[in-house]
Image (cartoon, rainbow, N blue to C red; front, side, top):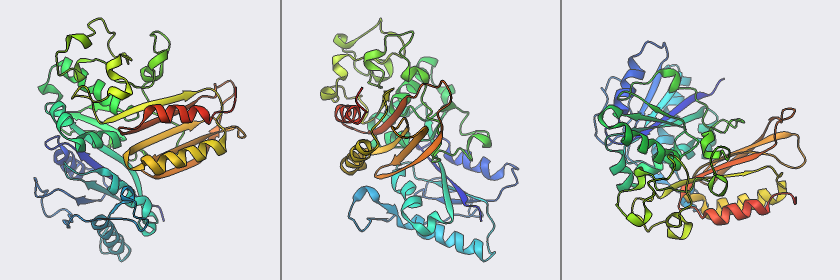
Length: 373
């Protein structure tokens, strides 16, 4: 029997999650959708829709690792839904989980991988994050939860863009891209999104597509060579203080600059530096499989709680196929992908999204896993 796809809908308070949810439920798509809500008394959806309100309880896995937490309330609700469906009491083809505006999507996502019974019935499709353009700068500055929701996203929808200037919107998009370069961004009108952009996005599929804006990786056209790895730049979205010493009026728009104020050791000199950051590793030299496995295993063990999402499409010595890996916190999976095409440059690309990850350690460690030139 086919697995039931699940979409996690997360986002800032007032970003239009409920509007989107109501449209998903009322639009004539012919699908029956089960909704699980985790909102704490905010704008609850009409009670005639399937809603489960349970106490928030996060349990720790037996190995005591806090980052491998799952949502016990969610597990119980999903098991109940599956049982009712098997008995013919309920009919639904997919599930949407709406999380509270303050929730960390990590334990919600991990529930689908850590629990065998859930994994046999449900398939996590993607995490969607709605961002309220009007209040985003403030929310991202004030709340690490808002940053985490951006970091976890497979797709970002920006609502209320009509309430801000073009410059503010551009600055916000620039900032979001630095936090999460793998999630496409789409400006929407208060949660009104075509359903084809909401369902079956396959964000957790091990596919050979790594959605990173080419500007993030390109070295041609601009001198990106030293800093193609997603360091912060002095773009207005980060510039909440008028510090003349760090003002780069001539700085090319969208460039990733490696100004000293953004070096790793000084990440917190500016209060606007986001905790959630991303960086990209890229190499045309093949990886040594054993070395890479050891290194990634060690990194995930140490930094797992701070690693939100990561993904790579890799050139490994000993195989003519692409190797695809991705993970959430400490859960990491890999698979063989398609063959490298004739004439295709075999380049490994990896993106890491996390909270205060030690970029230097990761970059040097990955470099040491490459086959000697």
